[in-house]
Length: 259
Image (tube, rainbow, N blue to C red; front, side, top):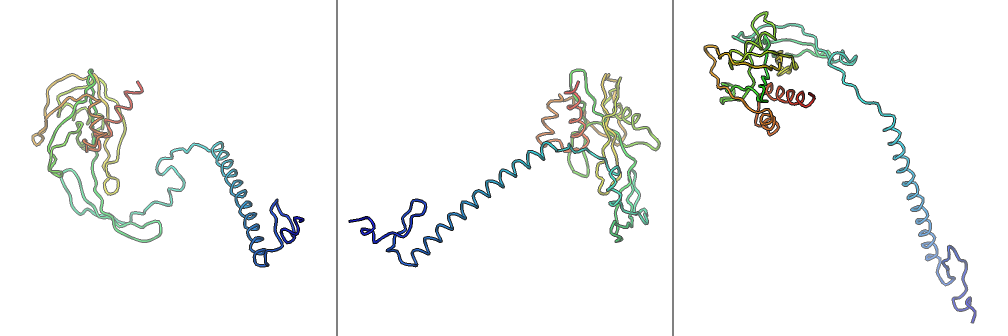
């Protein structure tokens, strides 16, 4: 018997698959739909592969063309002009021994008027004093606002008209009894710019000699000499909370690695 007779006669062969004549119309339509679905799936797979390859090429091109971002300081970027608030009025609300509290009315960039509470401060200096043996001079003092003793680098507020460098030298001697042969500026930080204009000028002091401490009458401190590595570990472990001490210690450590 011929193969045609055995299978009832075949109508066609597609892709090596026999579609036999004994299938009804519904089977044939379903089969054709499956073929179309398979073809569409293949097209979709090829399209996805092409898109993925295009994305890789785009990423490579972007990486090759990438320009390193440049740090632009505040108010130096032309866009910053659109961020400024206009101070319409400012009045003292309270005057203290070391700071004043003011209330201000400002116009926002969108034109709306609102209020601001501001603290005006004379500024301060702080000193990272490093001994020849690599130890940092620290002071321990009770801070009423926190109700606990903190560990800090020596620091104090500026007297009216006082040069920050001279303030740093004065505070180092008064609080710790050390004089420095060399005092160099590290950086200046704004402590809480959201509401206060205080800036602290940070210095590094080396070539230390002990001359005797002379703290103010209302100033009670203990002095420690701590290896820089231990101070850095304490900072990174979150055990030092005073901001100027954290920044001063990290700056000193960064400089020591560059020498």
